Length: 430
Image (cartoon, rainbow, N blue to C red; front, side, top):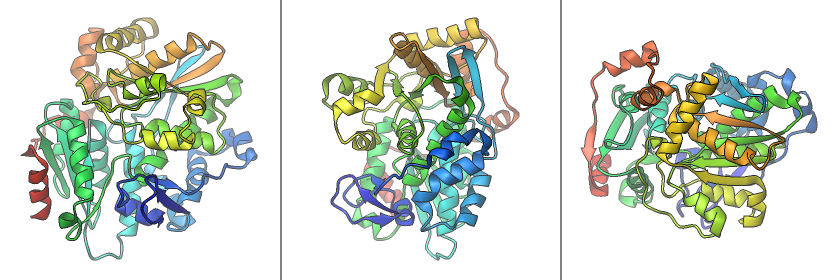
């Protein structure tokens, strides 16, 4: 299996090279040359398969030329060592909880998978690989945890100063070892622009092997398809058309769900639920893509004004807005609407949601208002404790802090402040 650049001005590469490069030389995102649907009996018997077996069969076609079956099963066993519970809210709505991993966020799956792939690829290398990654919140912690102590890999994380929660910041600034946090004066989009610029800066790349652990990297992006299949396994017997509502920022998660659909997973529709950073919602209405500077919200992991993975989504549906609209709707919501949803979930269903999950719930409700004969799943992408002040202030209750978070909050933050690309470049060339 080769991967090609969506800008189509760079050579095709193997999975291994796509992971190590992160982004193509022509600034394009890598995409698999083909997606072969899984056999029908895979879905017929999916409820009898373990999560490891499901993940193995789903990802194997993309990686098999670079990772043998035995090693792949070993990686998946280490990555998927926690639960992905589907929690009923009503008779036709459930939430898929993706926060039971080590950093309490959905990105644990992709970050851990990529870390183990990169560790495997660098086993016999003498040169160090630098993972350069921008985060709007949870990516940083998941990447830091996933790559902590991986031999031959240094991790440099850029995050926007004052625009991530206290817990998110501690998760990426307190680990030390091979993890370095750069605190950027600006927005997530500024961080992401710096990262993309560094990848194409020959003064840097001739001295350092850079790769990214954002969802632009295929090893971070593709494994996210696993938990859509896990959810289907759980609700297959309900016999209704299934829709997924995904809180969306950089759009890697929802794009991975669409790959699961391309593999043959029966799903009627996807909903990209966003905060007021609504570039995709506006695109779906106008067929005009106009990136905007991101706006800070209480759902900070979705504060993205130019989502990188939307180009992959458009490619899946042949850049045809009519076809895309058959499978995707996108709605945006304000902070006040988000808080109202959090309160509704708590008061009416005794469920504590974080701001991102609450937006997923809102998107699902809006879609089901016109499509009632569906079973809807909204993704709860982070533990509510990661947004402690917002959640407690909204529901007027105290929530229990997990012991591992309590210990991490006591650790001393260590970050390097920068405000320009030149400062990042100087740091990388040191």
